[in-house]
Length: 511
Image 1 (cartoon, helix red, strand yellow):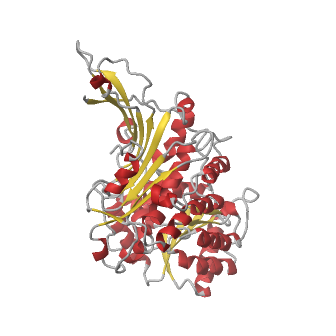
Image 2 (cartoon, one colour; image 1 turned 60 degrees about the vertical axis):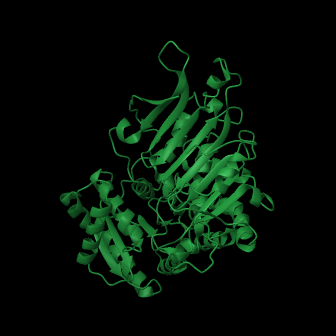
Image 3 (cartoon, one colour; image 1 turned 120 degrees about the horizontal axis):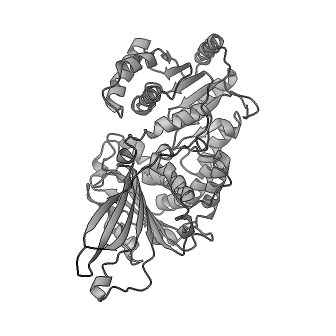
């Protein structure tokens, strides 16, 4: 049996009814952690590309706040070097970069120092006065979560942050918060309470960069924009779903951080569960932010808890060989670098359909994808038993990274007089389909933050429901040393125990 591929012809259509209108107001973006890894690798390169794509047409300023002493010249040089290194298009355009640096400044200061916030206030007032604008201030918390209280309280006391629910006034101050948003349900609630004491929920943009990826966004367009798929998007036609987020790198010198986090907190609680909700949510009333987020929360509410003895049956945790020798790892650490879970959603559409999810570090390939395997045909018409065994079930796959795209596997007859059958892959790739490289996730999310569009950001209730599902698993794992920690060879597909999780159900991982 051979696999062949068929490619789609792409015809573009207007998306004006879906894409929010641009924010035409001058804005100020303040990045706390302005010289940190996130700013260097993602935020400034994203701003460069937004400038290059002419997505930023209004006056703006970017103020990078850092504890380390720096001049504007050194700040520009730092980000020029890193944008040249991490930009998705190379080389960077000197003219566009020079134009961007005219809007980039740095500010040194201690996050606990009231004088720093007073100086920040002065700079923002000067920008507003010059451009005849007011309060279109965006604050990006690119810092560890333990710095959030000092930043929130410092800005609130200075009058830079206050509750100002949209759309009663425009523009309005808003904040963007990076994960991890807590480390369990209790800490997530405390952090939410801290932010909610100062801001309205609609001023809070909790970012998960996976939702900025084109293929994740396209899950909703694919489902609700194509009438042929929605009727079969349920337990009657789908056998099971697999979600994979695999990395081929180790902890890369971040051992002390990772050892306190682990793969369940780092990837599954946020990235994978967010993808799960996009794949399974009901049809929203509209494509507006809260209508979509309401449906996501309904899925979180119906995920079946994994507790007690079911943790042993439905969860596999593992560590790659050599993890304990990494710098910063505690002796005897049981922090998982790999996890696989069997998840169920208790609602009408998905009852008793298993969702097999897995994530891990130091694996053979870097890939994130979602695969829907459909039911086997009920009766085989194709002659011998051996021929019928070649009839594989249909599989629809969303490739989130790398090589973003969508593929559909189906069975067809091979040319010739004999009845030979094989799999055909219909394959759509973003890079070739639209002759355009997909934007980085941070480009889309930064632009939505500027516009004030909350669609791809997490709401408080969603964050807490996700932790409500994950926390019992973490608590049992961390308290019960009798739960076996599997191991796997670095550069492999993962532990054998993860294969057994599916084999018990007479299934297997697709890759």
